[in-house]
Amino acid sequence: MYSKQEQPPIPPENDCRNACTDMDRITVNTQIHFGKPCITGTRITVQSVLELLNEGLSFNDIIQGYYPDLQVEDIRACLQYAIALVAAEDIRLVSA
Image 1 (cartoon, rainbow, N blue to C red):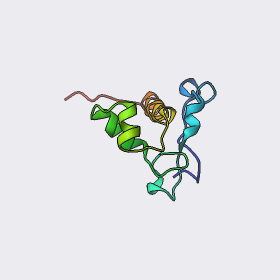
Image 2 (cartoon, rainbow, N blue to C red):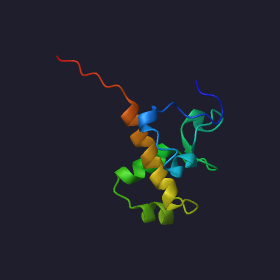
Image 3 (cartoon, one colour):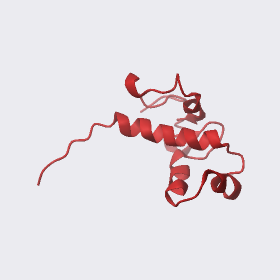
Image 4 (spheres, rainbow, N blue to C red):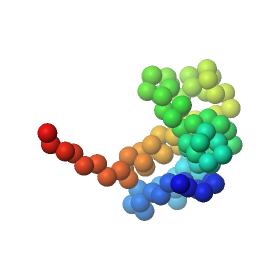
């Protein structure tokens, strides 16, 4: 679907990569976790970090208890990545 190191397209109006260098912390590589977005230089998926946040863990809890090599900016990048994907989504509601 996407070539190595290529990220899914983000519409220019939702692309914060120029303003937010944190997006550079997320990499999509078809050879790692079947192309799921990961924190650059790791095998930690964005999904894994988001699931921990969903469970109510703080950034520090995630770093201290699960991924000591991460930085706060890595976790912020996961959130920014998820926001960019949702913002680019075209949602169509179907009435019953």
